[in-house]
Amino acid sequence: MTIEFRDVTKRYPDGTVAVDGLSLTVEDGTITVFVGPSGCGKTTSLRMINRMVEPTSGAVLLDGKDVADGDPALLRRGIGYVIQHAGLFPHRTVLDNIATVPLLSGWDKRKARTRAGELLETVGLPTELGKRYPAQLSGGQQQRVGVARALAADSPVLLMDEPFSAVDPIVREGLQDELLRLQSQLGKTIVFVTHDIDEAVRLGDKVAVMRVGGKLAQYGTPSDVLRHPVDDFVASFVGKDRGYRGLSFLSANGVEVSDVALVELGAKLAGPSTGWQLVVNADKQPRGWLPPNSTVDGELTEADLVAGGSLYVQGTPIRGALDAALSSPASLGVVVDDEHRVVGTVVARQVLEVIEATPQAS
Image (cartoon, rainbow, N blue to C red; front, top):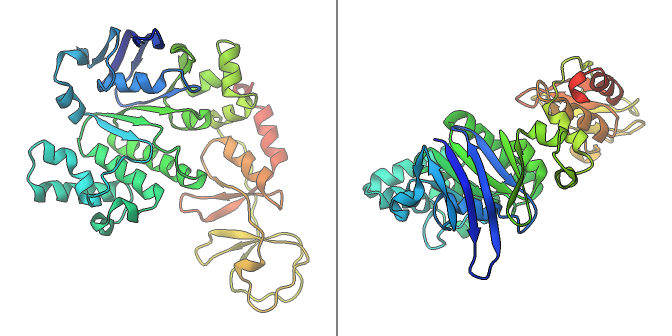
């Protein structure tokens, strides 16, 4: 389902203009991210889609139909909506939270709860959590429940207002991964609001950069916005390191992956270690590095190791390969497969050579 903004303006009675003449189209089955500083109108724009905010002028269309022509309650019931802090009902169990919209739509309780249990699994949560209350969940789990509740409407449109900003960075990355996985399966039309340009670049098929006063500054692919900012405001907002972020769209073809000797946790070393040694578990997943000249008393444990920096998943963009090499204490970026099993290592110098030899990087 496409979403179209046609010269949409929101002006409040005191004269404040939150959104000023916004015109853009969100294509069916894509993620469009509204990003910008506080006060730029990104949340107001999002809320005009489900009529939680009414535009002063202009029109918002869903598949060519003006949203103002129907019942606001019916409109909202048919659009998934996820907000910061999940917004769950504290007095309802997880299953009943997720079942809210199906119940409002006339489903019987058993059918609604069965659907809620299926959606828990869809967002990567065990069904046993369905009996708990929101206060018994972690922040990341609550946000996943919020996504499941939004999906329960089974609408082609999903609105997400800074849904991951209240969780810590590690949980946030996992939630972003989960959203991308879900989108690859479900193909929703998603409008996502964030103030974080890295999140926008990672998630968006298109990025709408907005400036204070509700003006659209630039609308395009993440690559276009990073490499070809239209003015100083956009260049400043995406940051001076936008060239590095641009590596997120560059293939790692040509990066050499070298073999690396592995040591398994629990092994007994004959003497001091020679050079940096990569330590893995029984599944060949990396656990850390053993520094040079380390002497281990008895079996090798994780307490003997140095954290290993980021991991580069083979086949993903070259930014991950460079980051893995630069963050590794051994100056060797660890390359893993989709199951996080060690494939080999890369070095920053060779990764940079590939970047320099690739025309798209300029």
